Image (cartoon, protein in one colour):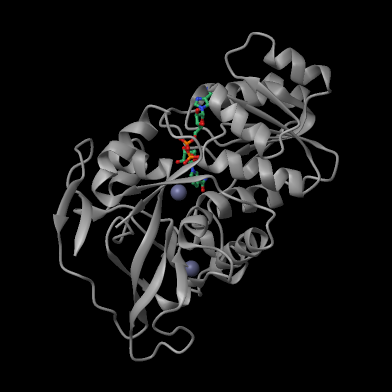
Length: 338
Ligand code: NAD
Ligand code: ZN
Ligand code: ZN
């Protein structure tokens, strides 16, 4: 089968023929119809996270926003049939037995496998996944519409749910990319007053079109002043891969506000303890989501409350698509189609 393969970090993916996966007893093989390109794929390909490099499979097929159809299944798979419309998230497998799996935090499983990181992902014609962690896509959603929900969607859904934002509270979204434009919509659905901040006018226009109450350029000198004049943000979610977004987000908070750390820049972030204490700021981080979170965000999308802006490209264009994402030229999401 055809696949886009990472052989070395910082090197272009090789578009090449590799062996088609075969399902184990409890696995399915999915014919990939669309696989979203997430900024995390770029971080992995560029080796941005040294803490992660040692767990990255080599050579690796990236891609963890997978949607397609079950093509084959293992002997003991009962709940899925050939032809089912399904998706595979970042959380490829979790053990079900560790403290975290047993307390509702399977996304933090100590033995987890990660799609497109520790095992091969969806930048390929076929991908293999455990049936237990393969989710059915509700009727009404195409593979292209559904794919980004398996990471971008579920991540911001869980993060905003954890922040316990209440109707009429002010939510600021820093970074209106694949994750951010979904975060704006979920914020609106939760009844928040959503302010969007990005460095690109095109992305701010996207935020406005999906319901943002206000938009600000991150580089405009009066952005913080404008946000503080409304009292500051109750919750500021950072869905940018830039450290500068964290600095601005922290400073946009009202006292007792929550900084939601989701974007994963290579650099460390740093805040003055006196400013943290004097505002009694809360800092909360969130990691993708559980299978239940995936089901809930898929249901929201099927009900029309969330819609990803997705442009498609053939799998062969994976390197061009990665380069556009690196340069900040992707508005919404790009999904690769084998
Ligand atoms: P993206 O490239 O689509 O979006 C990033 C956005 O940030 C772009 O719109 C860009 O213009 C904007 N931006 C750049 N500099 C900015 C600044 N100074 N201020 C405000 N906005 C700025 O990326 P994505 O796929 O949405 O992913 C975003 C980040 O989230 C990445 O770091 C990714 O690794 C991370 N991520 C985290 C999790 C998690 O579980 N925590 C899950 C998925 C992705
Ligand atoms: Zn992702
Ligand atoms: Zn576990």
